[in-house]
Image 1 (cartoon, rainbow, N blue to C red):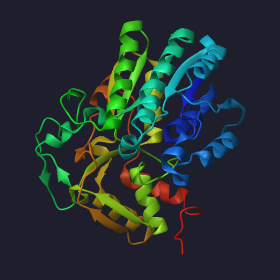
Image 2: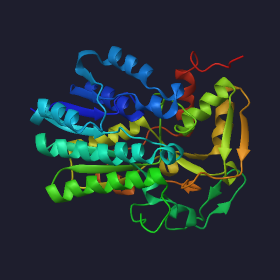
Image 3: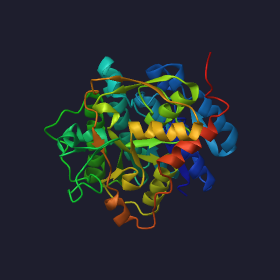
Length: 358
């Protein structure tokens, strides 16, 4: 019986949510995570706290392996051990930052592209019928979204009503002829390889191109974890550095729970080489300015920000995902969290942790 779920990045935001969810469904979860977020982002980014909590909460249904996904032989040996008992693989491990990738492009590419290929080939060799889910990113579209005819409003940029992407950007947007950032390029390589393994080897693979993935399990750091870092800065009274676009850049946000229930829907009725834009859509989105307003209302604390008049390379001025394709394939799936609900949950989960420092 294929009752084993393999989760890479299992102590991260999406990984840990996946562990809890599928263990709760009675499946045995094998986690792979070596806390590279601490290497990427320092102490703020470490996932050690989340792993400790995970082990206590999930218990014997979770088995942890401290393996680097770049370790081809180690990954292959682990998947060979479980073999065809593996029914689902969720590949969430990654180097997730624009800025960090430019500092160490070899590391970024080896983790994002090479690590994904290692996982795909190990699954093909040892569990070819397992559903393979890859957490990609909307950054595979590069800065093409920045060519949209945006209109500046008081607190955000916005598309005119009636534009083809007003309800969200679809998978029809090209990923070619655009500036991706080094990070975006490594994720494109991984994204396309997951599609290729699906089509070429007839494996049930799905690519979820996420916008802002978020939730209380995020290890909030300046270079990654937008909404969590907004709330952390407000609660700890840190200064948040806003980069470009007057703080009016728009992001849609999807709670880790809603994303993982989408994974479950795919696993129950898998398809081959599917690509889905996945985010909060029109239901759950905000600008940076609006996020700080909401966080201040929740906490009763004034946000401390400064402004750098230079957008990050490859950053999106406006991104709202269309989830129409996924909802067409899986009509029972629905979003349940919007931005205020996400920020309030983060506040309630971290009141004893994120406190102002002297």
